Amino acid sequence: MDLPGIGAGLGATLAGVGAFVLQLIVFLVILLIGWLIAKGVVKALTFLLNKIGFQRVLDRSGLTKLLAPTGISAIDLLLKLIYYFILLITLQLALGAFGQDNPVSQIVNDIVAFIPSALVAVVIVIVVSAIANVVGDLLRPVLSRFSFGPLLTRIVVIAIIALGVIAALNQIGVAVTVTMPILIAVLAAIVGVVVVGVGGGLIKPMQSRWEGWLGALSHEAAKAPAPAAATRATTPGAATPTTGAPPAGAPSDPATAPTRPNPAAHDVPPVPPVPPTPPLTRPGETPPA
Image 1 (cartoon, rainbow, N blue to C red):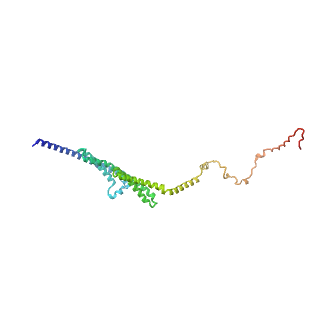
Image 2: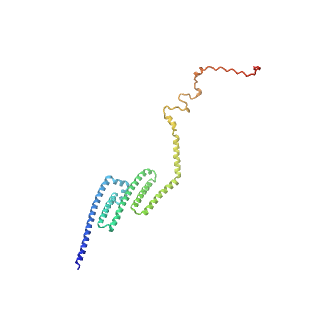
Image 3: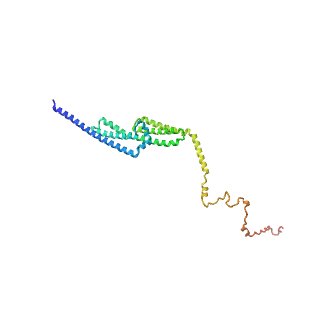
């Protein structure tokens, strides 16, 4: 019996077991520390979000009403994503105790790389939902006098939310080959409706509208006083125009106006008559009588 060989093999086995136990202890310690950190971060974020009124933002965005049938709160979903993200980072660090080339570490690395994109996608959905809710609140009173107002408002809100969901799916890389053509098709449909509506069917109505607007503008411009006349009318001591109505105190009929004597006419002496010039005669001729 080879006792030295058995002892060497047993020693190597015990050394391997000891190394594994040491790695396991390091793994568990790192997990415990990461779990404590995750719990503390979630509690701090819960206090902070409640302090700033984040729940009101979610209620305003409509996500609370949307998730009500599922029994999931949007703020709880966000906090759980952050909690598990910290735990996954901790797990990634803890698995490093067993070496970086193990398959579990590769899977955890892929999940850790996916979580930030998921958080950004959730934020995109929250922001877009808030925008859609604000747009709906603005359109409802404007379109309330039309019979199709509620339907049109709902279509606009759903379209905005759909665009946000497509952007969120593109962020996390889910079905990009499907969502991108849908997004392009929706935008092309909107542009086509606007082009055909404004450039085709709305030509006649818009033409009559423009004619009415331009006619009203011309009428208002014709009623407005000229700038020079308005300036003379508002300037004190301005000269009275020579044309038009006679000045105050003047008779309306010039023929009935009294004549005033001209004192300068009595001071001018009468002009004597000029004698006629005699006709020219030749020498020896008798001038005619």
